[in-house]
Length: 80
Image (cartoon, rainbow, N blue to C red; front, side, top):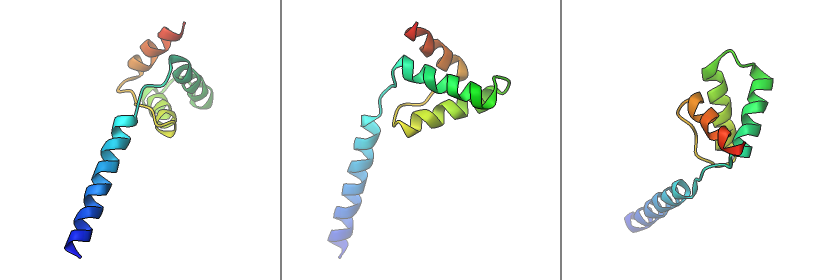
């Protein structure tokens, strides 16, 4: 039984590492679309709410998230 639990634990740990390694950056156009959606939904007054919204969209697409709204805007500029 202990052996089986160890195997299951190791497998779960390995899958977690694989999933974390597979995260990648969204294209600037995808980030721009997410940002524009969030601005339309929440307005542009609350930066934290916008950042949370954009990051939720990134998480849903299994992409890396952003630390600040400034990072989001700088990344979007790559699309133009």
